Image 1 (cartoon, rainbow, N blue to C red):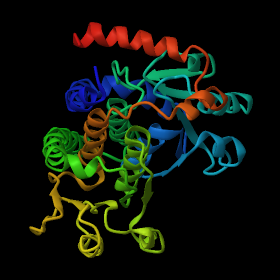
Image 2 (tube, rainbow, N blue to C red):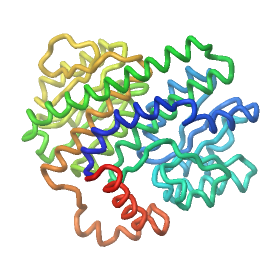
Image 3 (cartoon, helix red, strand yellow):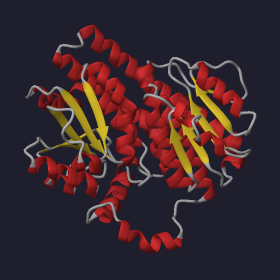
Length: 371
């Protein structure tokens, strides 16, 4: 299984998880109901944090309470006090992330419930959490995670739906509508995957040039911008930055020259401001793109299927995952520079045994998918 295989598998896995949605998130909902939590705090790093940023607004809307997303370092240092009376959820797809493990240790030391979400309940994280929950990835054996990001977004959305129902915020009709909206977003993910494949095939040469990239998005799409920039950096190995819309035009845009890659992800309800920025930048670089659910027929637009606004990350994110996987495969840019590789152990972010776990996952992937 290669990275693109997992990208293309995501909508299938999300569909399967949707079929067992109440069962999938039931234990976390029970934990949430077990005490009078007044807020939710998600502690995560890298792609897991970006997934949480994609769904933070949805969670706040569904639960009608404050939801914060913080890094493990920030949590341990100072972000553990406010919001008060929050349920803390630490997330690590691999279950080996040492910074997330440190955050869980802090929770237990300070008499906080230590709840962990992971794709590997047998990983070292289980020794540091009171409760370890599998969020429904299945098997993903590639380090550059994509399937795990999409399924985490879905899991958190489902937690928001059933958690909102448990709180009495959402009635049965609202739950049914939100589940239907989620199903539509999953179908849009599959459609957008094909759109992205066609775009990359048509623009492979220019996407293969080693130039900086900038990704812009607001709200749920800020999480998309974060994850897109990370994927372009770690796979294609190009400098990639992420910004909110107005932050982008308050200085970072001043570096743009012809040849820069610029991706602007439109607001779900449509933003004239972002459309205008994209139009302006298309006159500076031919590699300026606007991903939008509200196209006006411009040559630099890529049409995204209509979905519920707070679920926009589900189709938008797969565009960048597909692009990163296809271009990296074409360039064979998976490996880091030899100098960096030589010192990588000094900057290790995974607990002991991680490499062995990856080999185990590869064997499981071959068994599960026959590839």
